Amino acid sequence: MNTEQLFDATAPNKNVSVMPGTRVALSLAIAAMLSACALAPGQHMIEPAALPVTSADNGDATSDIQIPIKQIDLTLIRQIRAEQKNMDKASQLGLFAKPTGYKLGPGDVLQITVWDHPELAAAVGQPAQNTKPSDAAPGFVVDSDGNIQFPYVDRSIHASGKTAQQIQREINSELSKVFVKPQVTVRVASFRSAQVYVDGDVRAPGAQTVNDIPMTLTEAVNRAGGFAPTADQSRVTITRNGTAYPVNVAQMMKNGKNPADIMLQPGDMLHVDAREDNTVYVMGEVNKPSPVPPLRDGTLTLAEALAQAGQLNQETSNPKQLFVLRSNAGDTPVIYRLDARSPVSMLLANQFPLESKDVVYVDNSGLVRANRVLNLFLPAINAGLTGAIVTK
Image 1 (cartoon, rainbow, N blue to C red):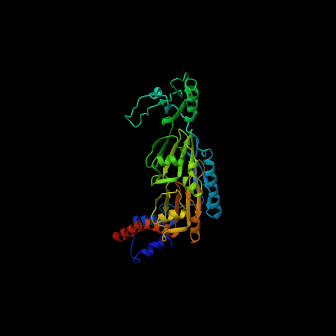
Image 2: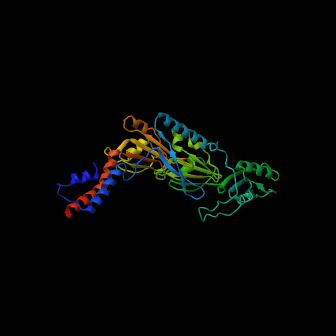
Image 3: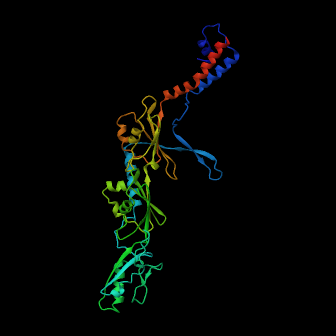
């Protein structure tokens, strides 16, 4: 049907005349509608996807690259799981260690007692200062050079890097030159030389003092009040000497590994991510498009994300075109597609793991796109026909 035939069909009878200006307006509207039937307002997935490549010199887009679309199947799921497992192993190298005795450092305060020698009972190093919780306990402070001074010992005793038992033996050896079989005990009265910092989604973030209790990963989290209800236990990061080590605590426990086997060192920083910082965005033809946070253990499958978004819209969605868009740091983005027309495909969706900032997009059907085009142009056509009738 051409434009003239459409005018004849819309006219009530052959005697109805349409003004030339109205005819031109209607012709333009109908031509636009007929030429745009393949287009639709809003988002639509085009295959194969193309992205502009930006020039590093002037920032202008110079060319387009094609992004391959990978089909979601069992082989792909097994490959992704194997890569995640290897990544977890590599990230934890060097973090596992056995606990050792506490090593003294500058700022620590020692309580040194020599039994059966009351003249040394008052040699406590410094008076009591119980004015603030941060004040040191009475005792002998390890100075900035790592040394301490003690009566009847002619030299400075280097304490930094040694245990309290080693200092006890050294003082006992020096006092044996003056006293007969001295009995010496040395204990740490105040631990002040080393700290680790815990922040993020814990109940009480802040600096935690390293003491004679081994500072394991679980010990540090417990001292900070434990994980907050909104914490993502799969995204714990330990920063040591400028290097960040991601640790998946939830996955370790599932695999039978104890997070207490990870030893922290003085100066380490421990950060716990919040689940809301690692959301997945579900868009397109779903009943409730929205950001979806991962579960408490940090996991989220494609099926779980769709369930929280109200599932696919049965009237407007195209189940064949279900996409997962993933942006890899420094690499070309990856697009995964699942044909969700069969109920069996939901088994694959229930096993496909999503990652932080993934975009799940459900495309619309061709009929929906055509209807949206018609709805866009019909008001203009109706206005033109109404104008023609009024002009008559």
